[in-house]
Length: 296
Image (cartoon, rainbow, N blue to C red; front, side, top):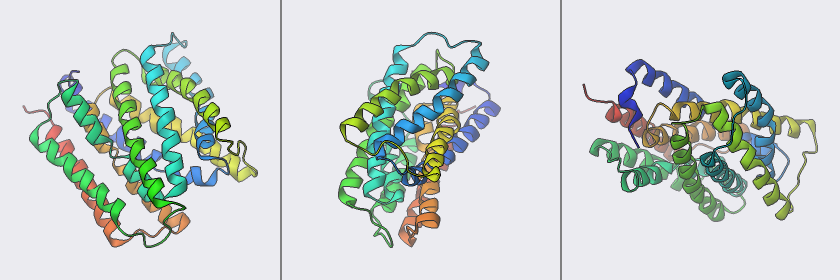
């Protein structure tokens, strides 16, 4: 895979980075909406994709005049994203919002390893140091003793959240590859259309609560759909202009946003060690961006 930074001006790279950061911050709201949705964890993912589909179809038609043919790579992205949502949402149900989001965002390790071994994208030593720093910060946050809510089954929740990182890495790589030949909105539409029925079948098989019982629950489900379009759409657009490894480190700002919201809304106390971990992770993000900047 060719490093896309080399063929774009610095201003374009800066814009892509800002869009990526915006998308990561928006996605950070996701765990809060899942908790408020009043449905099963996998069902929340189904409603997220279902409510997003009409808007994605409209955006795709505006961007390309019509919704053109399906691409196999979009199928892979959709399946990976469905698995990502299923594992992550159950992680949110069993452990704290901060831990579930941090552990699911250990994606840079997987993305960097695959890009290096399979795609022959050898990272710079400084970039590897940045990844290590970002992951170390995430690990500090995850391992810090919970000062408040720990979850129904923290160990199980942590395991599910960690497994999410592998599915998210596969989604990142699939989207990064697909963006070479597909527009962001068309890719989002087909991957979302693929993932929704997968999540519905899984929710039925797990005998989950399928519909919210209050208007607030329906509002949370609708919010998940809008968040999906704005957040994942921004990330998909930026992945067409940034290397997958660099982008996967940048979205580590997501768990910081989620942890702050979990503290303010659910009283999940953001302790000193978790704050330290968030700061270390952000330092890794900044260093990754600096180290990935092309030499003159």
